[in-house]
Amino acid sequence: MNLFKFSSPQTFYPLAGRLAPLFWGLAAVLGAVGLYIGFFVAPTDFQQGDSYRIIFIHVPAAWMSMFLYLVMAVWAAVGLVLNTRLSSMMATALAPTGALMTFIALWTGSLWGRPTWGTWWVWDARLTSELILLFLYIGFMALHASIDEPRRADKAAAILAIVGVVNVPIIYFSVKWWNTLHQGSSVSLTKSPSMAATMLAGMLVMALAFWMYSIAAGLTRVRSIILERERNSAWAGAMQEN
Amino acid sequence: MNGSPLLAAFRRDVLQAWRRRADWLTTFFFFVIVVSLFPLGVGPEPEMLKTMAPGILWVAALLAAMLSLPRVYGTDYADGTLEQLVLAPQPLAMLVLAKTVAHWLLSGLPLALMAPVLGLQFGLEGEPLTVLFWSLLLGTPCLSFIGGVGAALTLGVRGGGVLVALLVLPLYIPVLIFGAGAVQAVATGTGAGGHLSLLGACLCIAAALSPWATSAALRVSLE
Amino acid sequence: MQWGSLENFLNMGGYAKFVWGSFVVTAVLLAGEVVLLRRRHRAALADARRHARLGRDA
Image (tube, rainbow over all chains, first blue to last red; front, side, top):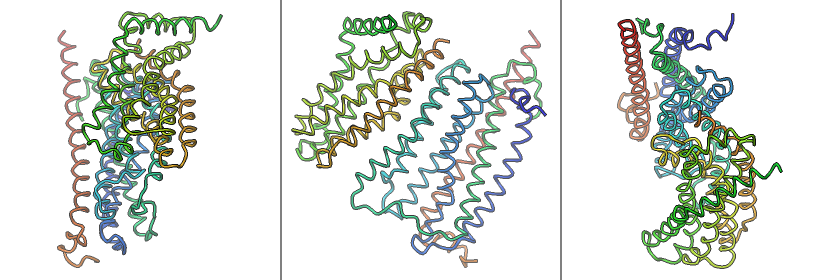
């Protein structure tokens, strides 16, 4: 089987259409299992009480936000170097989901921090880096949206994504360093309380669910992007189903 | 003779900027005005101003450097010179390097020279003042290099001026942290050596990588 | 069942505001994205078909 066959948008469109429901289903099942473990199997934490249950979505969302940026940049770079349109479309399709994950990580992190640290927002290295990551996502989408010619937008956004990926470790390092210098009498934020096995299991299952969700959302969005860009071709107009 | 076209590009940029002095002076005075606004906003309490000074001066420098970005390639793009530069036999990255150095000389260096004077207004004295100068001297070229990528990406793009802020400011954060951190560190007596070395490292990375990214972006913008 | 009653479950040991604030907002955001994705796909399909019809007529 020739895998490169699927690198053309026209052949990938129906394939993505068949794969997307599978991933939506996996996301739903894993999400249900993860929530069950998170709420009914995992015990109450003796230190944080039940507020710790926020990490069942906070940690997976934070993981996905970083992972998706990396995947997005890789697709964008492939599209730039090999000049494959589909790769660039994949990068564009992942950006909004990545930004959403980043926002969820920030939102839940803030709600977790209020009872745990006593404040809605801490200029902690991880929270700050996450905020900057959100800015990077927004920059990518804004640049892509403000260039009308799709291929030029793809390439410009790809360069930005690559520059961003080079910068992310530097940003993270600098913020971490800045944070350790400025940390006054506040609580130690890096302590990792020993986690019960069921808590860890719940978190991992939720992480898988978020992962499947992201793939499903990416595939669904890339289908729309393919149609929007190929709307003048005969095959796109012949698509009767959804 | 290999260097002469680059030198010519550099000289041309400096000369052009000299003829349009008002453009660059605007950036410079923007920096001065923004810095002067802070005491009016937060109050004249000397101790507080002293601790805030490095951050204020550095953030103002970031904004000023960003404000001057659209001009780096903007005029050349508008009058078609840029297309000639891209087609020139010299490697585009080298021409970008020459233009970036010219940009720094006209926008970054004046900020570094002016900052100690403004620092005096905030009660900085002695060593923190010299460190402020050195941190800006090392940091502003980083801003020119990183900003060049953003400037090249937003050429001829709708709302380019605001967009460039969105793209470039997050990438400026490490420079801000190390730059302002250097001054704060020396003010609290821990020594600025580490911060300044890291700023130097940032400059090396930016100088080595950003001309390539900028020239790639210029090619995309001119497609 | 560790909660005993629905009330205890909803109360989340006193942290209801934070826990449900996180989970409900996340659910709403994800559901919102799904709705937007569907709407976008339907619009793209309709647009492609319209373009095809225009192409045939011309």
